[in-house]
Amino acid sequence: MADKIKGIFVKDDALHIVCGSQVWSVKDNGKEPNQWPKVHFANVGTSEEFVDLFSGELLELVDGSAIYGDQRRAVKDAIMTTLTEGLMPAFEHLRNIRQSITIPVPELNRRQLVHIPLPTDEALRLALRVKPTADMPRPGKHATGPKKKRARKNSAKR
Image (cartoon, rainbow, N blue to C red; front, side, top):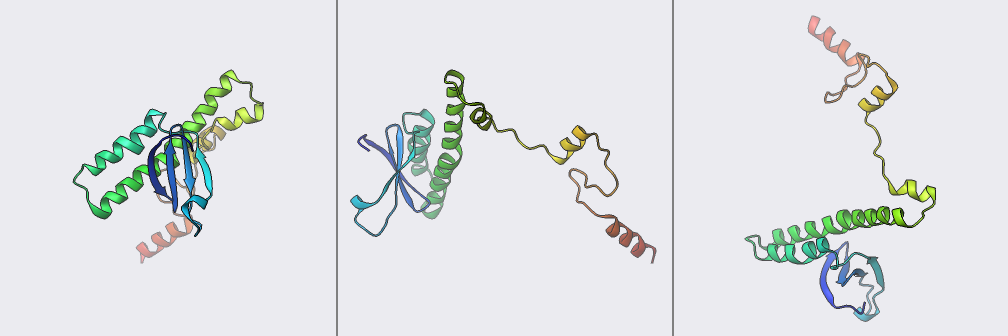
């Protein structure tokens, strides 16, 4: 952590410190702050433009807005949550994919780099060429089983 501190934010009861191209995390363990354990949180720091934008400029814009008190804190927390749980992991994942083009990677690792979404029920039916029956749930409609339909028909006849 020898680089100049570019930003600090609190997330999940930990203090995250953005230093150059790295993010470090420290947690209060009841001792003096210089004895808190340091954890290397990410290799993505303010050297990346999107991190600099979110952890610096965007938070400054929130400070200059007409949002005050607890709402301002909630907006800043939401921005930092988006950065640490969404954008940083995605960036690291994409960086690994880019590196796999130039550096030979074992096939098992290469398969793990690309996430293939699981098919929906409708896509599975199309792939398996299964025709929907009356008791199968339809996309966009609530599933009602045959028993409920019969019960409604019987109550309507009475």
